Length: 170
Image 1 (cartoon, rainbow, N blue to C red):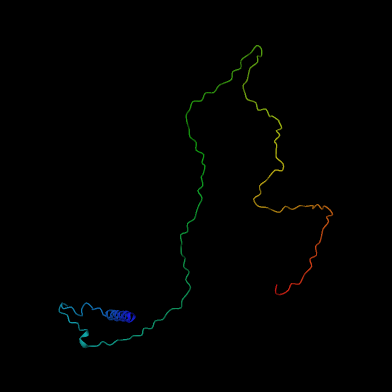
Image 2: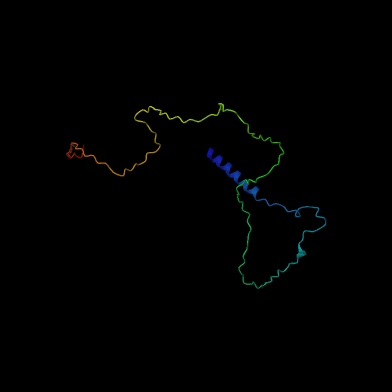
């Protein structure tokens, strides 16, 4: 019983919705009372005849036309620093010492304090643990030009396995 009531209410709402949607909109001149003295009659009952004219035109044969399009393209130019020698004149007084020869009766020792580089040859011994561990990120093949063969007799035991046929069910 409840389903029948719900169904009938939904059907009534759907029918009412369709009636409201079919309304046409009015124009400006259809039901207005002040249309400034003009009547709504188009052409006063006279029908116009449609005149159809056929216009023919001669179309010239197309010819190829080259079109140049200038498209701006951004070009990256590296900045170049140009070193240009510039002469700047500065008037600075410069004192020049002149060596004047002086006569000395006898030679005397003069102490000169100039650092002199003397190479030192010493051997330093560093203790390295054996074997020395080296970390390699990725292993790579090492090719040897002359292979070295070592002949050594090794006893080998061979086991022969017997095949037993198993029963089907277990």
